[in-house]
Length: 255
Length: 293
Image (cartoon, rainbow over all chains, first blue to last red; front, side, top):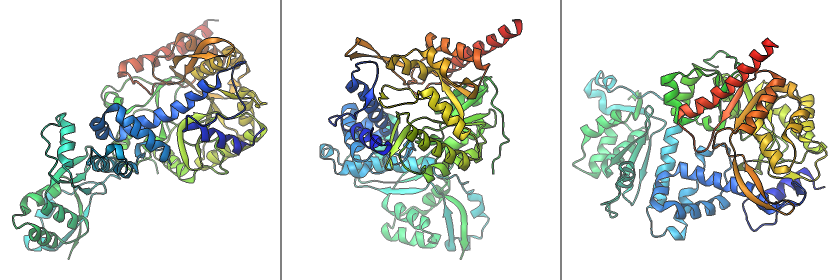
């Protein structure tokens, strides 16, 4: 009889490839239909992993439909089987895979939507942290504000895209995908201060402002970079949003 | 390290915890013995899964039922990262029971998300025993091992499954989780009598029982023509034939923590809760019959 290691090797070789030969030495009843029985294992694996991808990428699924998603998922799974039993995080390579997947050429925004869904999931499972109340800042002398730097929330992330990713995400939330202008480029800020994952559509100046804050720049420096991008940069609104979105968890330093 | 004190799982029914039911459970606080949790779903750093599990753990005892340790996998040692994450959950939530499967799911770093079959040989037994030892010593706790549902078996399998499990207990001091639906599914699929399996099974080591639903596919086998192949999909209610085996089992073991598994087409809470009440009913009946006799 084949060794323990050999048995596993043969079994695995046949699992993800329907045309591969079925391992020898398997039995059931007297003269069983081994092919149909082995197909249950093949089916369990592939159906389970398709379901995991569907659950992790619900917007991609809604955009392409059942049949297309299944074909895409099967190709992806064969090339990138999960490397961990934590299936809620399965699919880190899915966005890149979609960007290289020629049947999806007609949907050039799909890869960025997959990126958004990966970021959403990272935010959902990120370590918890308590957002700082804006009142803490208001207690500090206004003259000192420009020198402040902040600790930002572990769930916070920014995604810039050449496609209207915020509108597509919002359209999926509202179940209304009509009238999305594909010429628009959007960036989003994601944060999960408490239970819900929040997503904000941010313009280029705001994107620069939030990135600078997340990179540990002073409030004054972040403002200067943003106003340089857009002289109409709305500081008061974006400053309020830092707290409304729960992006700030602490004051890092008063320089 | 934990905020919880160890809380014993009573000899009552429990159900597998599903995200769909978090809010109902916390609002209604149903009268239920315990919940079982798949640790793989709670291995993220934070977020709602931990928030809800913490709140539920404050009300109920829990068990951690792993599906990804791959105890029957071919590697020398278990995946250290997976062990670490599992242990962190054990320390955080103080489960009364920890269990895993007599199966494998990982090969050379790839996870196949199914419980795959093993030949029951001396080599497999040594290998399994090493992995169970490793898991138990890492966790600092006894692990219960569950019998698989099978669609095929290995021709060269000198041990019967029941004997294999008994040997595993003797070598490692592990306990057993007996899945009654898996007995029924495997017995049908491999053409043996479920009650013969139960008679041969070392019931004295059973610390937990699983109950679940399965589906039926038609299969054309060469010797039987069209026959039934049972698929262990946990997507429906427990059928009467499985309840019958369960009754026979608790007649031997007495009441034990008994879990309803429902993982696909998950029903509304009352349906799942009712399944648990059926199991409780059988256990209660068993006790009262015994008192009378």
